[in-house]
Image (tube, rainbow, N blue to C red; front, side, top):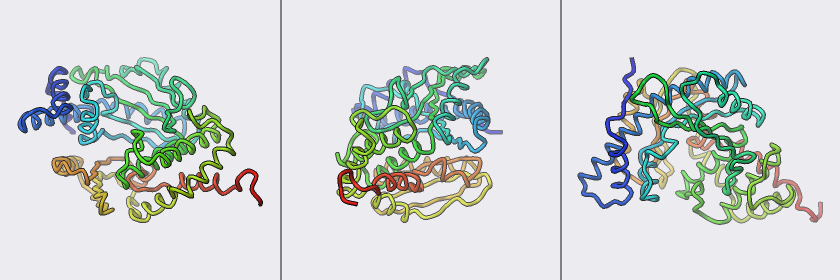
Length: 349
């Protein structure tokens, strides 16, 4: 039987640890203690995340038997980095320490699942908030990101976990391809496009693609990219000629190659050394073995190293659930290529 980690510290202790990391003013011993407190708080989200995922998976497969459902916890280095960027923030206010993601085929399926989950009777794990990045409340992000997020609060029988929050992301294949491409660019190039940092032309590229995808899916356009589809495609074509995003993404895909072809249950750790473009994929027989390896890697605190643990029911689905770590951006590049292959308005044919 699996032993679940429980929260060992009060919310006030977690908040103090967050400030210690955010301000970076503690002694080495204080910083080490703060990291341990935050690590425990992060790991404690595994149980409520599992509980939410079980519910979500059943409903998602009812909507579409081919739905891809996966879960992962926010990486400790990512949490620490966010605290350093926002020194007054506490991890107790982060809603995505535990994350579940569903990828469906269409906007209609996404909205059907969201309605089912929001109105689920007798659910002890309550949907506290819905963020609709497709239509309104609040609408597409300025970056071009689109999807629907639900924030759950655990409220079932295990009192030690009550109040912990889990984020569910529901996306279409196209929306997931966009997010995958952004994460792949960040992962391999060291940029921070997801935080609005990076080459302005590349940032604009993804805004334009987000709006073109919104046209395709008949949802709200991205702020700042609300021209006609032809105007957006013409601008995108000119940008691609300058920045070569598609060529870069195809190059990243060739670096990684093919992994995860078996159908048996496995746990993987992925280790990417960005500067060298070197990816190591290790298959572990047990989750405990994989978690031990991930803890060892994260303790290195190496900015050049990106490490992640992935546990998914069918490894053959891994490239669909987490394509960003395999740079499988074919769906994204195919979509963009189809839009920029048309001759520019007013040009000779």
